[in-house]
Image (cartoon, rainbow, N blue to C red; front, side, top):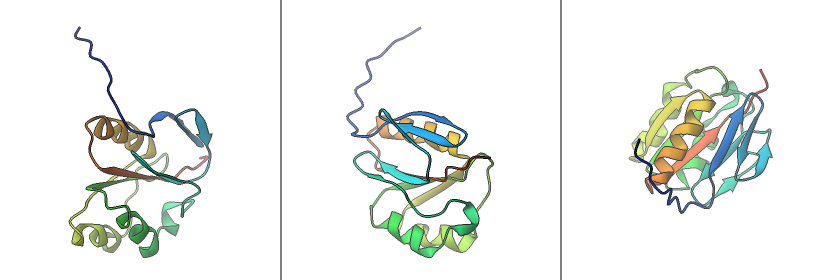
Length: 125
């Protein structure tokens, strides 16, 4: 087994996720949030995917990521295609996954020094 040194220089790293909360660095959060390598916005927007709107997507675009990861809670659900197309029209990738997967993917991309934003809906279901 090859071991390598973790040189992640990000200010924020997701340490854990469980139903109803996510731990970023050493702080537990129980509301929806946005995290980038250098920014943490909490609380953020929708408590459920059905509340996601154009304003939420535009606030993510203002962060100028190369990719947005949308964590939709415990269950993978897709937002209206028009919301996804807003980001894509700005040349920003947009991936939808359950929140646990979005947390893991954020850490991988962040460790590769990618400019990624994770918008995580935290639900208690």
